[in-house]
Length: 597
Figure 1 (tube, rainbow, N blue to C red):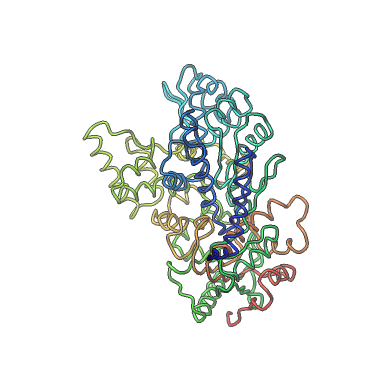
Figure 2 (cartoon, one colour; figure 1 turned 60 degrees about the vertical axis):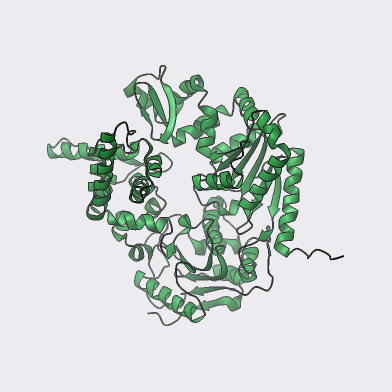
């Protein structure tokens, strides 16, 4: 009798993890399923859903219950819908969609809570009391109308966190969703996750909660990151189905607590480091740039490394190789948004991470809507714009919207950012986000008052923590409005990974045959030499978050390739940090680049 072929190491580890997961489901034990890069986290989540549907699908439908699956993006939601054949016992949605599915029927409680939310006292002071207005959430644009009060995205999460403290609300939620899975848990709002864990873990009648993700791949600021709660079982999936042993070896040394097995232990590949410590030029000294080479030298070093890698068989085509820029020495010049970068000196995160309200609106709403319109995907266009334009109520209105969009698409190629914003403000039916509209209105008011000599000092703006910080934000906005809008088009393409270059913001979850990671300075939240040094000598007290930001980004970047990984440091690597690199990559795989002046 023929014996079944033995499982490859990665498959064996995956089956071991799935056995633990299925046991948690059988016993009703909530769990966190930690799946490192390349482990096949989504595959495991789908397997868990299929097991539950096979065993309990019919009974769930009969009892009008569903398995709730919270996803991070609509793309992930659609993937789960497709792979479960849109089974009626599965409800998949983004966190905001899930929360609103529970909140929307709590109108009286929402009317009581909304006035306590941030910024709503000021809004209601102008519009009057809530009264009997319907509380609504569609687009994430807060506003008060005669009969309706519309919530922002943040409002929905704040309301959900508040309602989870109510036993009656929790009973209603459990009755509707006795099982709750969260995909990419590490990027899920920290307050929401904490509320779930606090109010449900260990409590009788609580839903089964399963968290799927990887704490080391937390790369968004509001995410909870790695979680550890009493009563939450921890399952580690020690498999890597993406990368060859040379790359996985680096990841395992970087992360020894979750070692990964590979499919083919003999698969060829490489993982190497290049550094610029021998550069004889004067390194930069500005804040956030200290220790980096000049922009000209950075470009020369990258071209030199690309030539060396080409000699080694690399092909620098978008389908084969991705260049991940963890530096701002090269990005703006390479990608065609140098004027935008100049508006935010020393604050590169503000535009690449879309922390500036204008940039976020243009990149996340205007550009995708225009792309959908150009492709005649009008349903997608309206979904993106949401309430930015009114519903089509007549053929005349349809023609007017088409004409408006045609003018907008044309203006993007010849106008400035300010001209596009002004067009959207003036065109009938378009609505700007509250923060964008507020700043534009303040800028116009200040200009009018300045013209007659009554302008007050320019206001401060809020930082991410909501505190006032001294800043000439009006000057920055004036500069931004003068930038050719074509640079927004280039920035959007870069952020979303549509070029051979990308930062981690456009590649999380992606994989490529070859990856060149260019590491340097220019970010106000990342210092990779410091992170590598702290690996060896310990993390200073109070610096855990700082360390994890840089470590997670470095891990995500290094875990993308299937076959070949190369890392180029344009910033100077200290002896302690070099020791960490030698430990991870091996001393024989670290090279100093010469021949650049």
